[in-house]
Amino acid sequence: MGGEPRRFLPVSWRRYRSDYIIQIICQASLLPMKLPVADLLILLFFLIGVLLVSVAGYLYYDHQQLVRTGVMTKGIVIGMHRMKSREYPVAPSIRYRIQDGRELVFHSSEGRNPPAYSIGEEVTLYYDPQNPERVKLDGNYLLVYVLAGIGAVFLLLSVWTIGESVAAVWAWLAG
Image 1 (cartoon, rainbow, N blue to C red):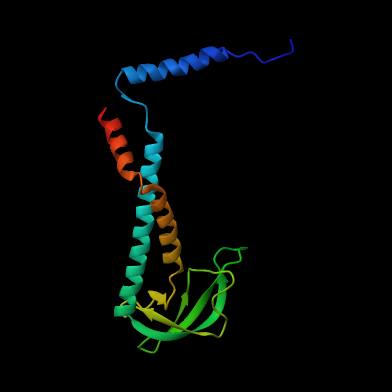
Image 2: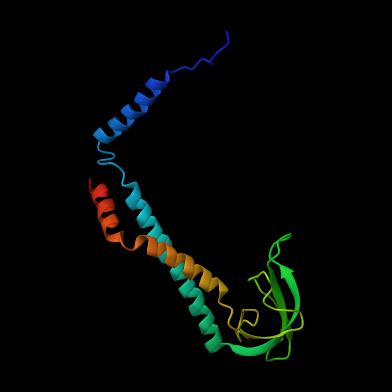
């Protein structure tokens, strides 16, 4: 009684059964043609690239709006905190004074390794006068650069054939 475990369906029958099911689906006009997987991947790459570049553009625009309409002030780095426990990238905690004289602390969410700031360093930041806890550090565009760069790579990988890919996907959808 040794040997191979008993299977309910022979391997060859299982393979033919899946081919038969695909053939029935195609004959029923649920899938009129072969799925254009490569064209869908190119379209997906293009859409991811557009999304990442758009998010980077929005973040840059939001930062620039706060620089134009916000209040510039100086702050002092009072500490460095880890983004996640047991990980090294650290971000600054900055104490700053707003127009009415109150002191607030801003905990940056962009950590770097090695740290971009040292404790006691004076930094320039901008805050929203209506919401003084909305703060942007001067010249802190790391996230914008990263998102735009990754988005550009996705766009460059897809831009030369996007027209053909869209046409192929539309032809597949139309049947």
